Length: 429
Image 1 (cartoon, rainbow, N blue to C red):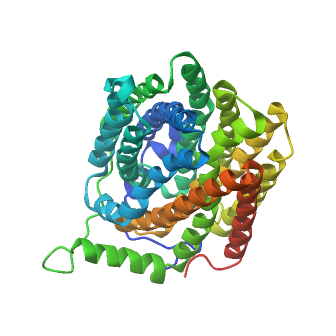
Image 2 (image 1 turned 180 degrees about the vertical axis):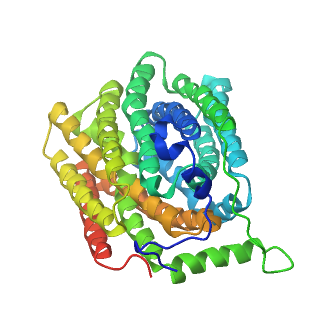
């Protein structure tokens, strides 16, 4: 059934209780539960920012190969592709609080504690690949579980704002993490820098333990026996592809956007080192400028959380054009300060897509199906990501970083065209 606003109207939602609480009268960051989630994510995202550059720098320093460096990005995208739909089923079935805390503790072990315990001579690229893959499995559970839990303590009218604020933690992690990582790598080495992540994930888990998650909507089963995993998968697929065509179009647009943006993230140290001749400290600062742009857009999205869906899609169009043009401009600059400014503009452009897309899913999907829809959305986006990382890793190695960067910029411009087409069509069917 469709409501007056043109959005899919849900059965009694989890947010009903939240609408009557402090979240209505106070900014999200001042509410107890969202403030705890945001604080924990801020700390863990800074740790992620520290470790991400250390991972990429370690592999490139040892191998000297852009293609082998891009394998880090590939390993991080395989679990969401292969396991995404199944993870979505369990996100809908299991307590999200348990999933989130368990994922954080596993990530603390894999990319924090274990690298500290491995002797220097045994800490090879192959060992790092294994740890990154297992870490990605835990992260593949954490992401959908966190996004699906937002409606349990945030009212529907503030979904986009909540997603933007959580993306703001990612932005702050990009701002401070790589700069700290570059200094740490120069002073101590990549392996020691990875050890910082253990503490950040433990702090995030401690914050989540204090969060009060709303109770799920009671659903009366229509069958004598509960549905199987396959039945749940089919139900989620049918809803995302047939019943709610807007979600299928959104997933396609996200796939194209992620095809370019993931390649940029995975190969950024290669571009900076080969095109500008920068060391780890300078690369860290340049990457931080991308985070500044993401943060500015995340703050700006707080004022568009009540916009109609098609209006938010038009914002995606304009920001994708901005990021694509700025990336093309990077090809013709050799000044690191101008490059930093352009990277900030790229960050501004990239920052709008994910909070808006997640907000649309949270609004359109029934509360008992958000996990499955997110799982299918993530599978589509990450499949495109692995293709983009592979393709642009090869292009960069064979044709040079300028050609690779130009190709990524063109892909982002194409994603703007697809989003423009989507904004002119009915989002809700």
